[in-house]
Length: 137
Image (cartoon, rainbow, N blue to C red; front, side):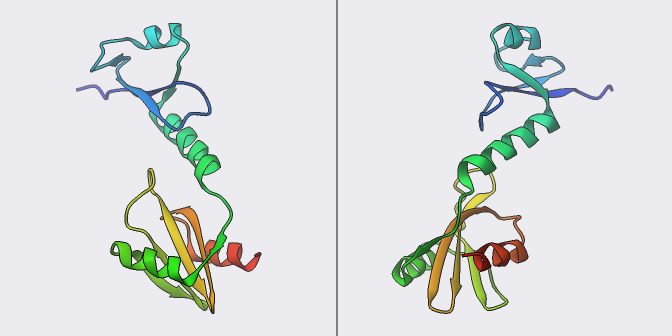
């Protein structure tokens, strides 16, 4: 059985949304072909390339600088849902809100001494990277 070719249909190069998934050149839902989408002005990319572009665009759109919050907001976030990846690293206490904002991007929280911070981060972001980011504040 031949391997199926998977492609993603995107509205443009800056989108974070998939318009359609093509298997062997056609959408299994709409029956539109790759050429139909191209004729309508859509961007069609190999699956892996499209996924990387979407991740890149999500990073630009959602990952911002750390911002200071109150201790009360820290505790509200910690007690709202069971936290993910709750860890202590080099004097920093980190956790992620268990509900994703999108993709694998979650609200991340950090306490350092009597200071409290939050930022959207991918759950795959290393603690070392986040410690370095906070050290620059």
